[in-house]
Image 1 (cartoon, rainbow, N blue to C red):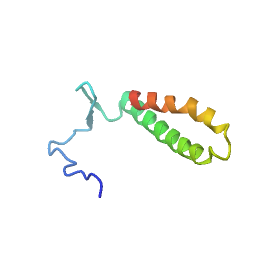
Image 2 (cartoon, helix red, strand yellow):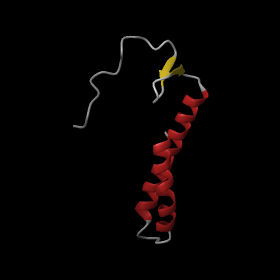
Image 3 (spheres, rainbow, N blue to C red):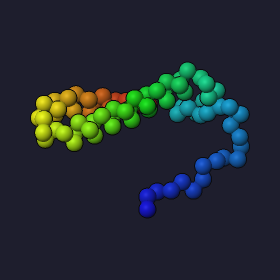
Image 4 (cartoon, rainbow, N blue to C red):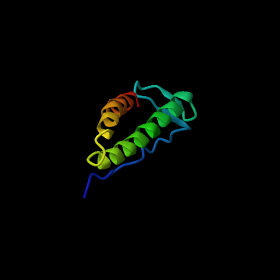
Amino acid sequence: MGFRLSKIYTRTGDKGETGLGDGRRVPKDHPRVEAIGEVDTLNSQLGLLLAGLSAHSVECSGLNEVIEVLEPCQHRLFDLG
C-alpha cells in the first residue's frame, strides 16, 4: 500500500487562516489562496488531458506536437502552485 498520512491535524485550530510557503498566515478566503487553488485545478485538468492525449498518440502522431507544447506548461503550473 502507498504512503499514508499519520497526522492530518495540528490541534491548534486554524482560526480560518492558512499558511503560505513564506510562513505568513492569511485568511482562507484570501485571493492568493483562491489563485493557488485555481492553478492546482488547472494543473490537474491539464494532467488528465495529457494522459488522454498520450493514450492516443500512437494512433494520431500529430498529438505528440500538442503534448510537447502542453507538458512544459504543466511543469510551470506545478512550480507556480
